[in-house]
Length: 93
Image 1 (cartoon, rainbow, N blue to C red):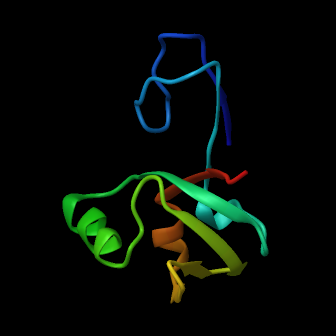
Image 2: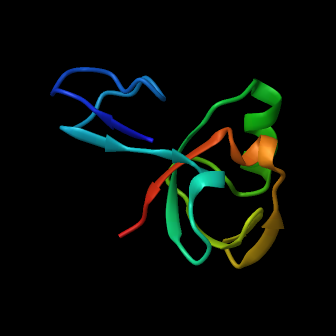
């Protein structure tokens, strides 16, 4: 998902203001072997709290091992498609 913005506008995906261009996609759309950074999590308070407890929150870098499996802070987690749909990421430099 690629969203273009003009300075001062809000991101359609997460509502945050930022620079000229916003490149976000659901985690499930990232390819195996990619390193990504969590941009935001779309979900209710319980989901956000659970993800934070697992170490997944905005700003954290993850390495996608294969579909549904990510390495975060040295540990490997398995996430279902419904959860990985709600985690928006950007490519990590």
